[in-house]
Image (tube, rainbow, N blue to C red; front, side, top):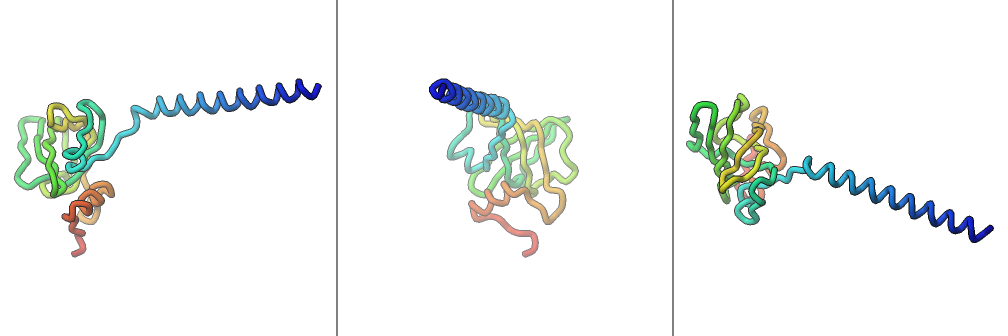
Length: 146
């Protein structure tokens, strides 16, 4: 009897760990498409992600770099250390402009970042944390209060 109880207990423990492992695998596989890694232009220059991999890139829109052609706009994003050319087709946020902080979601294709979504800062005091951190790392961050 004692041996049967011990065997049952071990079987239940193994079944429980198997269920937990299967749950983690399902969550990992489901979240794989939802994970988007943030890159600054310097990060892309140093360690370029694979073409087609969905990522977020952020920095400042370089001055005099915006070129509009119909519904498509092309511009350059910089963090002071490197630049990335960006192409976006769609409607830009109202606060989007040259010299402004932004984050774009999309993928690199042949060296050009094809943006699917663009987020711009929402007032003169705000800059996305990832962008501010990347600019601080490059030594070009200028808080608006100064």
